[in-house]
Length: 328
Ligand code: G3H
Ligand code: 13P
Ligand code: NA
Ligand code: ZN
Image (cartoon, rainbow, N blue to C red; front, side, top):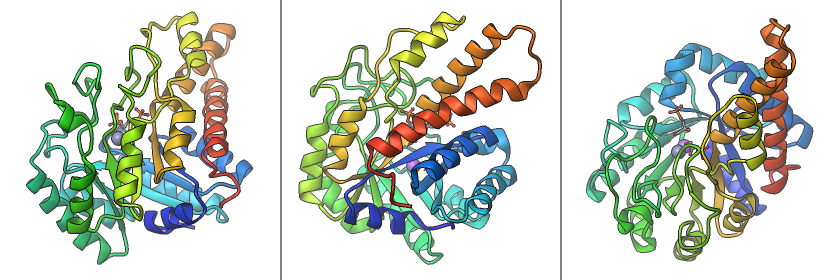
């Protein structure tokens, strides 16, 4: 059944677990996530970015998610819009049937320019009023995702601040978070702790100075009843990096957010964990490997099955590690 983000995260808080929110663009990703959820008895958040809507088209995306709800009626599913850049974008998603929207007012309508605190409060508060009137949940974001190593958002395309960011923008302030939640009434708050979107998050395995798990604890201590969201939470599996590179790929050395650090965050109020890159890497690695090992094969379903299986394994591992398993 389709449920709102608030319903799911209230349950997650009550039972001290986190929920991975996987980005979806196509049938294979949706099947991988749902099959993994079915096998582990996990509730699901399927999220679609503006890029996903551009890739698949809004009607296809909506029907893919509705098909998941129809095929697995016993699994609670949140249909979430990732990184909305304006109230208009959020409104269109509500009309499409999304049960949750993210209004990312930390960046302007271009998804690149950092905004003022006042703009963020105002735009988020307006989206909350509109969404709550429709029974739809809202995730807001305070602070800009980006690397504490380089002071940049890291990713070249997609959602991320342009130019250099200073320390105060890269780490969400607990006092400001409390004020933001009070003024906007968001259902969940995305915070900045040094993670960034994409595969190139850290140049070395992260330590506390570049991945500020301690900041989550400070924010949670200040606003214990607010559901926290971690973006840029892919772990960038080294085994998939190796497979991609040994079958013709050329990705550089890079590190993600270790699963055990996310688990530590979940102990301190993190309830939604955004993951896209890990499934992209598993899919690309499995596809490269399959095609290299089966040069005569030309039925796309064969490599898509390998890709789906690889993504499903990642999903199952995250459902188990985050304590989502058993809570559908
Ligand atoms: O926000 C970042 C997600 O990984 C979505 O990426 O905009 O390329 O679909 P995308
Ligand atoms: P990753 O790029 O780490 O998978 O993060 C995805 C994300 O935050 C989507 O909003
Ligand atoms: Na989101
Ligand atoms: Zn994100």
